[in-house]
Amino acid sequence: MSTIESSFPNLKQSGYVITSPRTSKYNCISWAAGDDRRKWWPDNQNLGYWPVDAPRTETLASFKIAYSLLGYTECDNGDCEPGFEKIAIYVNVQGKPTHAARQLASGMWTSKVGHLEDIEHTLDGLVTQVYGSVAVFMKRSRLLLLHRKW
Image (cartoon, rainbow, N blue to C red; front, side):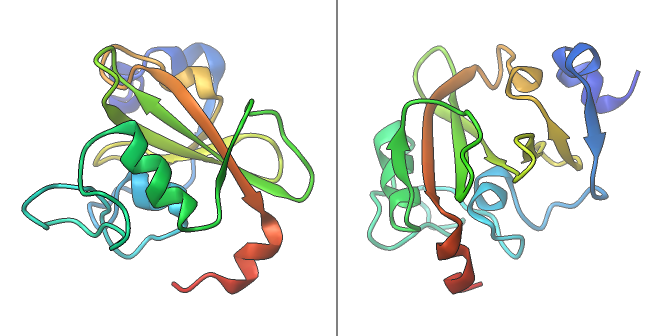
């Protein structure tokens, strides 16, 4: 059994594809934002990157603000919508954000899994006690991707 499947047993049943080698250069939060150059996290020591206008707190509200600064707005579900890119924010049982995934044009999701690889997967594949489950979906027009600043 692979390290990914050991950590996320639902992936074995739901299926996944490894899409890049392991790296510690970025994390799931930055990957969902489309940034593969740095780690994003609202730590109070300012070790990770975090958008200046978003509160530097580990709360769902802060994560929603950070992604809204990239043009995302909250939406009802993770269904694929032509012309839109979606993200899913996972929270643990305490309501603390733990992970974020980005939807691909195919309708599948892409994630940076901890310090492991990037994968293509279903949302349920990453539901665990550690990551919790999806609390919020957000979307933005794919036209905004043309103006990305990275």
